[in-house]
Amino acid sequence: MTDEPNTSAPPPAPAVSVVGPDEGETILLGTTRMRILEDGSTTGHRLGIAESVLAPHTPGPPQHRHAAHDEGFYIVSGAVRFTVGDEDHDATPGTLVMVPPGAPHTFANPGDEPAVMLSTFTPDLYVQYFRDLRDLYAGDGGVTPQAHLRVMGQYATEPAAGADRTSS
Image: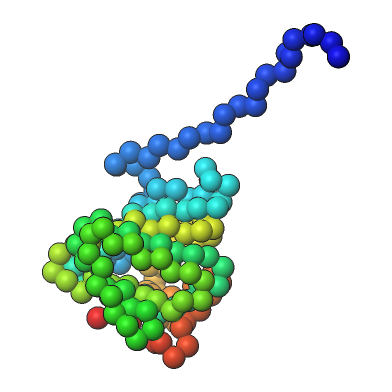
């Protein structure tokens, strides 16, 4: 062994992402405004995070199940109705709803006040789904249930068999 000093530099520290209150990618989806806080680029695509503001009386997507990612919802303000199969759960501020792969679910804001929720996607693949859905809303054909389901299908998501009602 030699007593020579180690002259190699330590590896650079990983980049830290800081997204301020008026920053992030904004996606408009009908009556919902989504702000992408983490698109997976900082987390090695292990995690995506979005903030969504659901206007009053916003209907949910078709009830569906994901095959390839977990989805979490933390209610910041207002109330969001989650439908899981045939059961409704009214989630108020401070409530966390975790949806594992295969669980049928949808959500809506049936109330008279806006609702704000944070959503997580592990891994992050569903962030691109929202970008694709935004493009569908911006197109000439509008968003039909069939078009919505077609975009979902590109991200290992399908309608929930036997649980086809949406929240109201």
